[in-house]
Length: 98
Image (cartoon, rainbow, N blue to C red):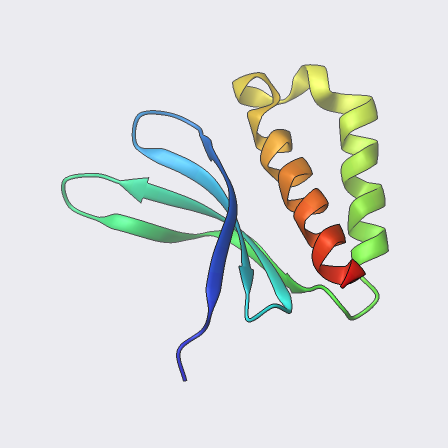
């Protein structure tokens, strides 16, 4: 069975790669690097996927808030990686609220 995937945020990291946040089957958050080169276009193995409804969500949200409050100035690409997390957080809060 094919997985239903909805992209919720994308941040350009450089000329050939983006960080993409997607919801999979309305139950998982996937944060993954996508590349677009002459030899390959699509997702890479560089990323993380976890279930939204297994109790990890509040811990993950706290982790992102700590990163935002403490290390934003030290992130590469002027904090753009964190921006995609924030967009994903807002979208998932809406999904969970339904």
